[in-house]
Length: 230
Image (cartoon, rainbow, N blue to C red; front, side, top):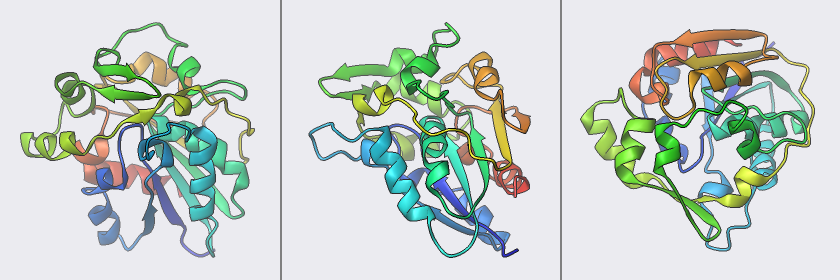
């Protein structure tokens, strides 16, 4: 079988930019990859882009010649779960500190399965059809173990996220492919106890001593664990 292409799907408020330090690690290992800017994180203003919009965008990108592995971080876990059944040559799923709603459940509902308030909850501010992040809490919730240089680089690039994306309910059933969950023990955005619940049903769960963004704080280790899923 040809080597798969890894489709990197970012979480809420982010974009393809967030994989900056991971993709050179994949290049060093001669791995094919693609990134995407999810519509819900780059909405022009109406706030209508939702989970369905994001899943469609990922499916269009992922239906390339050859096998693919979907990698979803945080909210991106909900996106790859919804998109998986639409991809012709899917061979694997990797969840990084991710939400993994059940069928009929939204990301917001999945995030409340465990009632633990986190730094990310403190950071989120609803503004009409969007959710924005408070800068101070965003640093500690998302990038706690990153260098000051990375924190200063990342924070200005955070965008607004549509409320609709968190409220859209998953419709697709689990794809019959191997799945791996990278559980981040030092996470202050999605509590590790919530990640334990989200990882139920995955074929493999691997724990990292990492903050919420291991692709920036521990890129080499993150790359190795992603590739192991193939």
